[in-house]
Each structure stands twice: as structure tokens, then as C-alpha cells.
Image (cartoon, rainbow, N blue to C red; front, side):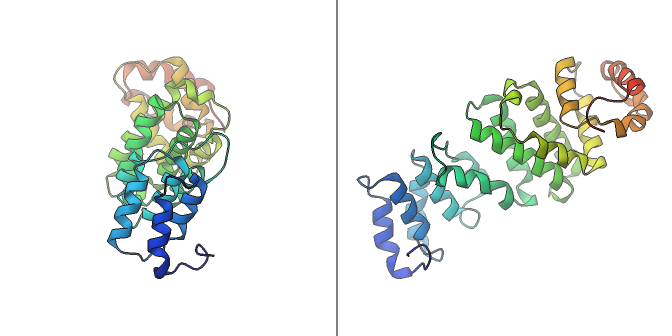
Length: 252
């Protein structure tokens, strides 16, 4: 009832319950969710301490209460919980909501988090979120505060890390969401592809093939890349000439 009708008078007892180590994690998380969103700084400080804890559902509930209004995106991303593998509760639920609440101004912080997570996280739920952030970034890149060229470079670097990661073969990654985002905007797709092809040294064939499978070099872009051959580094030019003659790999 407190969750459905938040009341300022219940803030103190709800926080006391949320902080009670004898209560179950699920009850503590529900107590946080029921705290009045308009509660003051004391409540926010106490909930922030809960967000720094180790209980995934309690952390998820605390972050959902704090972000985006009371917590910077970079700080929120640094506190993300690793949800319980055997239940879909507040920790898992919060990760699912992050891409929908990100704003164009969050582009740099979100890409930085994804770029760190993709090569280094053994957590499947974090990998799913990282891929969703890449898809969101591809849809948002023209709206960001940073220049499109800088954002395209950061997104290309993250996609390269994804293509090099063994985690790309994990079941359940939302790769179709990423492909759809790249398919929707040729200018963004080509800018990202160019940044990838401009990488120092040759991009490995397997990595190039995986990038193509992600939808970065569709057949519909064959004429464009053929027109860009002379401007590409030699290592990429040789590969792309072969691709252009056959049509780049990837979806039409």
C-alpha cells in the first residue's frame, strides 16, 4: 500500500525497515521503493548508502529511487548491481530500465561504461545492458552533446571490443536490437564503419566478419564503400576491395 500511495509520514519507518539487516532483501527493496519520491536530502543520503551495498535487489531499488534525479549517470553506472541469477526482481528490473531513461547528454558516460564492460565483465546481465547501450547510442548519436565524430569514434571502439569478445556468442544478447539501430541510419553506420576501418593496424578477419554480422557493412552500402576505397588505410583497402566486389558481408 505504501508503494501505491507514498506518504511523507512513512519515510522514517520505511527507511528503518530498508536498513534492517534482519529483514529479507526483497522486503528491504520494497521498503525503498515505497519511500516518498519527494523525501528530502536525509532520505536520499541514506538510500545512497544502500545503493553502495552488496545486495542486488536492494541496490537496484535504491538506484531506481535515486536516478536520474538525484544521482549522476556516471555514478549510477559505477554502482550497477549484478542481479541474482535465479530471480527477476529489483536488481534485474533496474538494468532493464536504464536504456529507456538515458538522455543524449549521457552518451559519453554510457559509452565509456560499455567500453569497459564488454571486454572485462563475466556478468551476462551487464553484457546485455552494454549491447543495449550500444544500440541506444547508435540511435542517439546525432543528439549528443559531444560532436558526432567523437561519439562515432567511441561507438566504433566499443563495437570493435564487442566483435573481439568471445561473449558475442552468448545466448540472449540483444544483437538484433543493435543491428536494427545501425540499419536505421546510414550516416551513423558509415561513420562508425569508417572509424573502425581507420583503426591503426589491420582489423583481424574474424573481427571484421563479426562487425559485418552486426550490420555495420550491409550490401546496401557496397557502392558507398567502393567510392571510399582510396581514402582507406592500405590494410582496410585491400579487404574492402574484395568485399565491394562481392558486396559487403552482413544483412541487405
